Image 1 (tube, protein in one colour):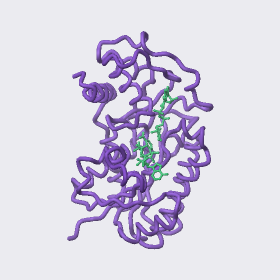
Image 2 (image 1 turned 45 degrees about the vertical axis):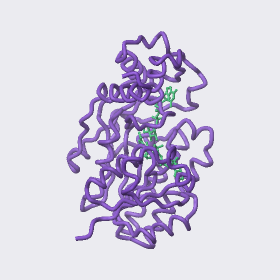
Image 3 (image 1 turned 180 degrees about the vertical axis):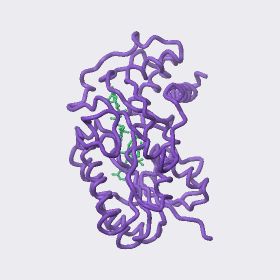
Image 4 (image 1 turned 90 degrees about the vertical axis):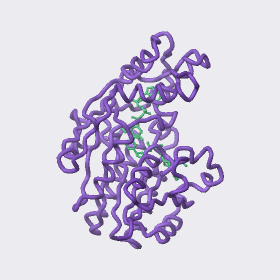
Length: 326
Ligand code: NAP
Ligand code: GDD
């Protein structure tokens, strides 16, 4: 039997790179959609893919252009499509609501529409987010918890979730949404708090910096490891029936706990280096995210393995290694 063909948007990102590795390991032919500039500046923009670059087929296209998405779907004829591309930084969505909504909502709509027209049997994964719960009325949150997004990013993800469900119900497509809680790794972007902290610790240890400016230290997040979370995406598309799933560890920790552990792992006291910066607070904060992934455990057989403290240590070690500190 011919190997399956997967198309990944957002393949250059943290999750895209882990997912591409996972699918290659399963024998898939893996195609990715990237921005045109990525092909012109591969050392920088394809850095997370450098180990597997030769085994991927990359297509330049724009999430903002239906025609370009249509062309790629037509050329690739995917069996499975993982839609991970998005303006994914919540803070930035307050600075530019328009491009966040445009990219995230239209990108999802264009892709679903092209798949419906060209490859209606293709299975589709949408990268939903715990930010959709926002100011949640209950803790922990599960698939039945009401959405109350607190940013244009969260709103765009609710719209993508609704579009995905609608294509499933209206056109019978095998379209799933994962409602993924925060997941991190040494490949996390530097703008997100976990990587900002672990990269900051390494710089301080290396004598390249003396302070780390942070916003709200009391926010609570349910942090898991990205390498494990992409496996849940794949599992969703292997089920006979399409559905939506929460993916989370079930445990939450404050940003302060993350900071404390990251600094103490290299023998430093965070109170000597962390400076509160009111500029880094968000106009509307999401205070508590904690997921209940019992449906994913029951139906998909998925459960997290990497615990919080091990995740923090892995990230700190990777950043210290990159600066030659260990
Ligand atoms: P990420 O590292 O920020 O990667 C985002 C990807 O989207 C990158 O490949 C980026 O391409 C691409 N992208 C952004 N804007 C684009 C545009 N206008 N046109 C084309 N491509 C664009 O994010 P991630 O952590 O891997 O997350 C993957 C997906 O899961 C995102 O949709 C995110 O919102 C969602 N999610 C993430 C988490 C989490 O905790 N990581 C949790 C829930 C949901 P460039 O490299 O060219 O910028
Ligand atoms: N980025 C950042 N920078 N966040 C800070 C800082 C800082 O200096 N100081 C405190 N925080 C707090 C934020 O206010 C937020 O409460 C928490 O740290 C986590 O922020 P991020 O790491 O930026 O992630 P996020 O939770 O907003 O969003 C991530 O997870 C979502 C899933 O819940 C992203 O990956 C989203 O794409 C994803 O959907």
